[in-house]
Length: 79
Image (cartoon, rainbow, N blue to C red; front, side, top):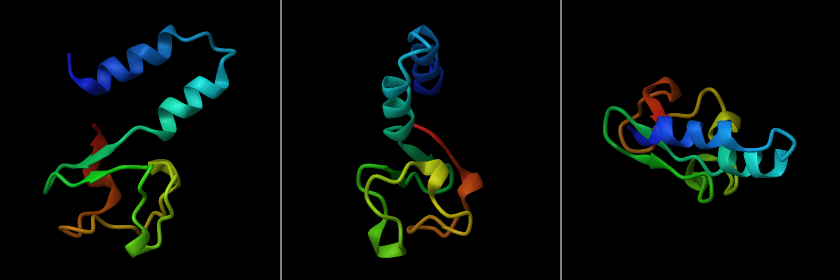
């Protein structure tokens, strides 16, 4: 089972009333570039390109690109 599925399986096992835990898991999800392998870590952000630390991937601007290869956000998937 890949880590993407196991991460979402873990979400389904949580009490739906525990929004804080669910939000923490979503915010801390790292995304990997399918072109070059760069990992976007929300805890670090990408300050050199205008993305503050603590920014979840879904809040990264639509025009942000991979700082290594220039791929757009659509090239990333959950790690």
